[in-house]
Image (cartoon, rainbow, N blue to C red; front, top):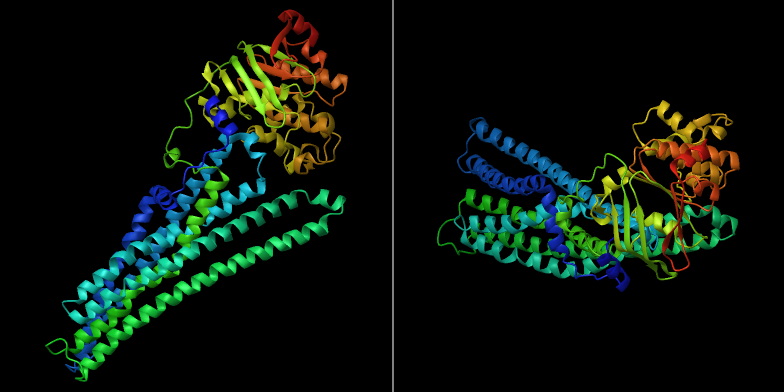
Amino acid sequence: MNTVESAANAAGPVRPPVNETKWLRARGRVGRRATGIAIIVPLVGACLTVAQAYLLATILHRAIVDQLASASQAAAILGLVGLVVARAALAWVGEAAGIRAAEDIKQAIRRDLFATLMRRGPDWMRQRSSGELASQILDQVEALDGYFSRFVPAMIAAAVVPIAFAVGLMPVDLVVGLVLLVTAPLIPLFMALAGWGAEAASRQHLTALSRLSGMFADRLRGLLVLKLFGRAEDEIVRVRSASDEFASRTLAVLRIAFLSSAVLEFFAALGVAGVALYVGLTYIGLLDLRGAELGLQAGLFCLLMAPEVYLPLRTLAANYHDRASAKAAVTSLAATFENLPAVDESIATPGIAWAPDSAIGVTARHLTVETQDRGAILADATLDIAPGETVALLGPSGIGKSTLIEVLARLRGHQGLVELGGVPLEDIGEAALRRHVAALGQRPRLFHGTIASNIRLGRADATDADVRAAAEQACVLDFAARLPEGLETPVGERGRGLSGGEAQRVALARIFLRDPALVLLDEPTAHLDVETEARILRAVLEFAAGRTLLIATHSMAVAERMDRICEIDDRRRIVARNARPAASILQGVA
């Protein structure tokens, strides 16, 4: 995070007004090829519908009026069957294309939202519920599925097909064409009125879903603590209350959806009934608005086409709530992430090319880190680490050593200039930074799995031999060898089953699997006895050969073996303490 971003965050997030429809339309470019197919298919199907209705009316006219035998119309009947099959195949292709487009768009949005999380960093994320953030990326983005897969194709078809059908029927019968042309637009008008209420209800529904998901995830993670303190029953009541609220919001959305469908069916039935009444009265001679005789073929064609005029509108009404859900989901995403990811971020290059082939230097100028609860942690600090240098960072607890490690690893926002290898920290791409900078905090995160699988997180393609060598180098085998399953021993989430020192060594083994240019360690020898500390330090220094190393520590035994010692003083600045010749360092390690 650069100085401008830090200042903006300190003043509070600025949230520009959200144009949901514009953002959704721009996002649709990701799946434009599949979306284009999904849009074209209903239009082509409409042409086949006209041909099918005309052919069916012709067959019936010949059979009833001309008294032709069925055998003489075999070709026309086969053609009719072929049109029916072709329409079914087109419907399948259109649905598959819509699903493909929606999946591509959702994947791109989730990728951009995740990139937004990575750019904000842990400092921003720890202020928010992890369950709510997960719900936003999963559930809220999933709410966009129907909009892209069903609503967008239906909207285009509903805007074009009914008018085209009504105008196309005017040469056959002007009255029928006018009736359909007048009644068809009434349906979208009243659907829009119902849609305003549907959008508000959908927004409340998705908010309730996000709250319920976040509450459930957080309670599940803290289930053991709740049980230990006897608060499980109280939390069950709260979860039940949130579930009831979610159910109530769901029913509100369904009520509005049923209202929208009722409006559609009313006007559609009115239009079809009007056409049927006109044709029937014309045939029995009670109504004559044509000035000419209405043939059976023309009448049947108008009757067959009347329901088809309203079919795209029926499809739109069935999927109209998808639009309201999508707009509500976009509003929720904008509120949670304080903005929506820019549409062009998916094609933008994430940072400059940064691939150091050797140790890199670290430079910090006017480095300041402030928090609302603690005030200034670092104030106008300066730091210079030469490429390949090993530096120890000393200072009492809470003085800012861990904060400096987090800043250099871009895990915390800051003000001032920080450069790695001469490149501003904020300009380095996320993937490149994580590849070439290795950081180990005081409380490393271990996941549910085996010891070996947790080590392999450092490099997914590492062989069993590589994992074992890293474990031996980090002294993991000292305790793993005593376990019945060795490195295949399972551990719980957050390293449950291992002590703090053992978890620290497992995390250190991850780093030994990698090839970073800069290594940042925060108390890597904490919770270790003197002998194990010496062995770990020897392994770290051997690994750091040809790399830049910064260790935050309280141990003078560790600090004295570094090339240089720095300290954070009472003024929150970084000062040099002393330096040791490289030869004495090697003797101390030996």
